[in-house]
Length: 520
Image (cartoon, rainbow, N blue to C red; front, side):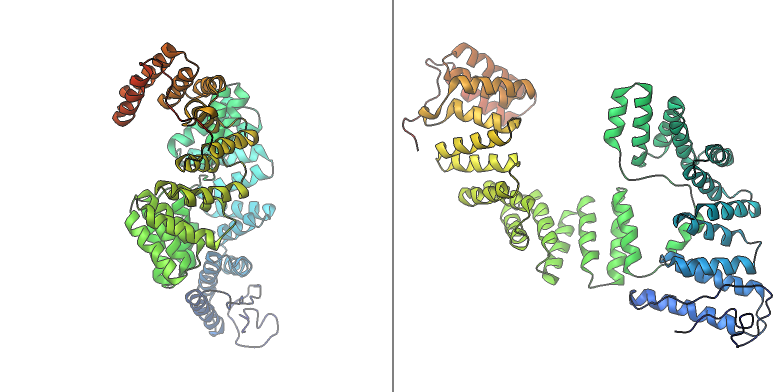
C-alpha cells in the first residue's frame, strides 16, 4: 500500500519537492478490502488523485488543500474517521482561512468525545465565518456536555437570534432550563420545538420531566408515554453534503432506515430501491423495501418482494413471518398459515410466530392444529393470554368442554389479573353446553368484575348469561337489553342481531340457557 507521503521533503523520505512550507501530518490510506466494491473503487480513485496531487512538482497550497479536503470528506462520509481527521488537519494548515476544514474537524472531535478540541475548532470556525449557525449550535451543545451552562446558553441564544426558527438551539436551551430547575421555561422551549417539529419524539422525555417539576402529573405522564428516539438537529449543509458523496448499498440502506423510522415511507422506498439497484442480489435491501412498501399501503407489492426474498433465501424466517402478516391482513388465511408454519419450522423457539400460526389455524377452523400451535406458545411463553384463549376456543369447538374449562382455570392461576381469561371463564361457567360444568354464582362474580373493568356489549351479555344461570331472569333481561341497545347505538348490526336473539331466550321462563347433562 502506498503512503500518501505529503511530508516527503520535510520528513526526509525522498520524492518530488513540494512548494509548501507547512508541516503536514503523514497519511496512511486505510484498508479498503472489507468495503463494498463500489465504495472501495470510489475511495481508491480519490486516494490515487490525492497521491497524484502530492507528486506534482511545485504544487501550491490551495490545490493541495482542496485535494486533502475532498479526501477527508469522503473518508468522513464512510466513517473512516482517523484518515478523515488527518486530511482535515492538513487542509486547514494549507488553507487556514477556509472555515470548512476547522468545522468538519471539530465535528469529528465532538463525535469522538474530544470536547476541548471540538470547542477550539468551533470557535475557530465562528472566527472565520461569523454567521455559522451549525457551529454555534454544536458549540452550545459541547458546552452543555461540559456542564458549562453559561457558555452553552450564550452560543445557543446567539444561534437563536441569528435564526429564530432554529429548533435545535431552542431544544438545547430547554435542556439547560430543565437542568437549572427552571421548569416553566424548559416546558415553554420544548413545547415550542415539538409544535415546530412534531416528529422530534425524544423531546417528550425532558418535557415530561419539566411538567413533573411543575406538579402537572397528567401532562408529565402523557409526554413520558410519548417519548421516542427521534431528535432535532440544526440544518447543517456541510454534514448533509457528506451523505451525497456516498455510493453503494450501505448508504442507501442507511438513508432508507432513517426515513422509515421517521415515518417517511415514500422516501424510504426510494432509498431501498436505490440500494437494490446498487446490489441486485441484496436480501437486506429487499426485506427493507418490502417493509416500507407495506407501511406505505402497497401491500401487494410488499407481498411480491417478500416472495422474491424467499425464492432467493428460503430459510429467511423474518421474511416468512412478515409475509404471513401481510397475507393475513389481506384475508388470505391459507397462504398466511403456510408462511407462519415455515417461520416456526425455521425458528422453533419463536413464540410470536407460533401465536400467529395459532390464530390463522383458528380462522380456518382447523381446531386441532390451532390447539397444538397455541399449546406450543404456552410452553414458550406461559404468560401469553392470547394463546390460552385460542386453546380454550379450540377445545370448545371440538366439544371438549371440560378440557377447555381446565385450560382457562390454569391460565387464571398463572395470570389472575388477565381480564380476557376471566371473561372467557365466566362465559363458559355461565353457558357451558354441559350444564354440570356450570357455576352460576362464580360466573356472576367474574362477569361483574370484568364488566366493571371494560364496559362492552359482549361483557354485558356475559353478565346476563350469569344472571340467567342463577335464575335471576329479570336481571338477565335487563343486562341483555343493555348490551343489545349498546350494539345498536354503535352501529354493529351483526352483534345487535345476535344479542337480540339471546334476549328473546332470556325473556322466556325459565330463562336458563339450554344444555346437555354429563361431562365430556
